[in-house]
Image 1 (spheres, rainbow, N blue to C red):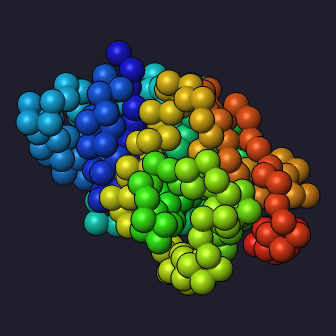
Image 2 (image 1 turned 90 degrees about the vertical axis):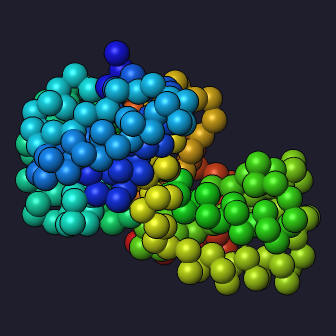
Image 3 (image 1 turned 180 degrees about the vertical axis):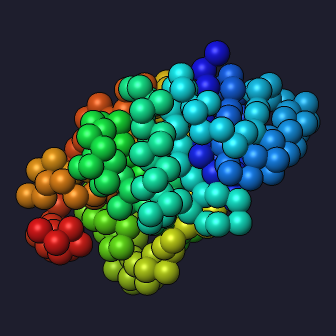
Length: 279
């Protein structure tokens, strides 16, 4: 039975657990939080919704972090009443978790967990491919919705990605498309200006968007999805930057990131991305 562990039963963790269970792609979801009774209650609530939602995943809650051993993937989310795992508490958590995770990928679901991802790579020696942040996928989803509204089309027709860092995300519009046509052929300059103005206020995504994005990436990891997803990763020379977190399109497999792709950018976009990364 495939198990996904979610560290933190706060709003993001609960949204991730619900989305994973509803996808019916995971046999067991384990919510781990220092407030074990809250984690168990939230797991029970989601499990009882199964007959209504038509999903059958097994959900459990616990305060024992060692139970992550044997999981196929681990999501670092937010603790009950304490927000995202960050700072010294986040570092201590990772030091405790990593020895039990074997080769499982670690998905950072929070919007501000880039430092934890970098710490896992540089200080704990976790392979770069096993570390990814899912918040860029939530942001890209929000941008997609805005573009679809402006173009009066389905969000499924919009293809785009995001680059840069969570502190300064860049949408490469020259790479984006709508219904197979270059985005700049579909939207007028005035429409694109309106979209860009709205995009500037979309960060950070809310907890439900962050949770669903994390669940989406976990499902892609487990199924070796063929499409690429915008993820936060430890850069390995892309845009001339190494050993710092940045956003890139990536293909995923059960072992983590299979391949990253550096899009073809306009001169203006390349400067924006390198400025965001501090290159």
